[in-house]
Image (tube, rainbow, N blue to C red; front, side, top):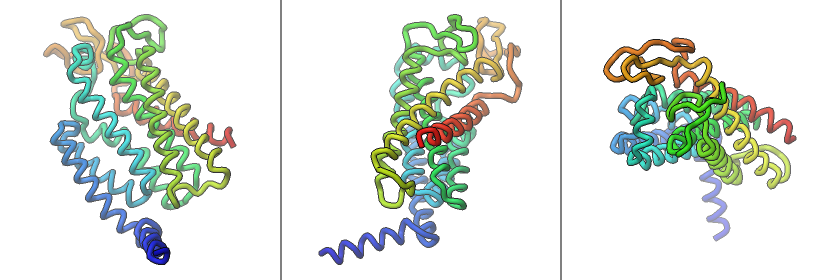
Length: 299
């Protein structure tokens, strides 16, 4: 029995490790990515273009990385999609979404804005394996999950948000507005990625850092939590300062959209090219850098 079990583990090591295993992982990732993308289109979580991007991304994550990399991406997508569907029933959220640039099913731009940096890190780790890439990746994914959770749940707050730039009350849905509910949701979203990454790190070959297992796991969770929260607040700050914002001449509301109430909006502030996707990319990069610094500080 033990010899059979050993042989099975050997076969799994070939399947998921080394150059040969990468092709096997790519095939598994492609099959899984296409399946997830198809289900996402059916549930209206992704557009068709977004589904194609997600399938390509899932293949890359699985082929170049493994369960920790692809699993973290899946945790982000599954939880954020679930929150979006759950909140479609809430009127307050529906009203806030009228001010957002993009709502409903995620398109290709949103898919790459949230997962593109992680895929680049995954490729870098495949070429030059180092645990530093993993810590940065965990910070990036924790940040995009934290920001999504904060956006989805923060708009349900019964208290008007405060602008992170001015400290004044702003209407629900205003870019750069923060609430206690949204901040708690951001922390929970970041922590979710950290707990998953810590569990995945226990699998054979998933984590190569030397040291006591307990210390490494605490470092992973702390890195995700702190890096993710930092990324979420940086996202809010960029949204309140440099993101392009417009004012509707019909209703007078500030919005991320170039059209509102059926009319063209006028620019209020920010850079014309700095849309929500660009803000997401920049904030996730900052979160990754913060996560790397935190991991070094933790030793």
